[in-house]
Length: 234
Image (cartoon, rainbow, N blue to C red; front, side, top):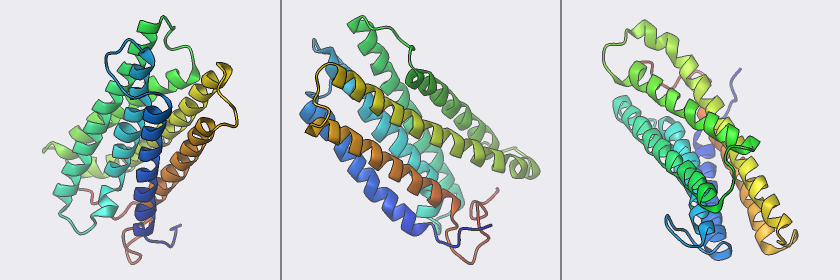
């Protein structure tokens, strides 16, 4: 059953929310947390790179890759497929760097690694993301795959992609919750401006993710078959 709505309005909403989320996480890390650094005596500055890259580099760029077929429906399919592939590759690399910064912060601060659900889901999600990218590259970008193989693989590629994306959103929400809980246990005012900013950023990310998922599911044009049909199979 189709949604009966076009993807375009949801892509507009998603882009507006992406700008808001990016600005909010940057404001949080720079204004409240002191800035960003890959090397610093204040190890918290190293950690601050983690939420910035995971949200802006991993989730937002990954979202753009997901929506590219609906944002540019009239473009040549080979061009949008290449953009889709490149954006996902950049998102994957930035996600790996973001995770590296979290490990670096933990190691240099004497904190254990991989003890929380957030970290477990994070490693699992980035691994699935990499597998999904390799699968898509081999099945849809490299020449040689038979058309019937691509037709059979496409629904699974889309399904796994949406699953990994939702998993990434859930992991991000757990990350916001975990960091805010640590800060509050260290004395941060539970009703202060920083706590409200972190919570509202997490809410914006939820709305952003929902907009992206609906945009991915909805057709580019209502006269087209509902669902994923606007994505060509070749």
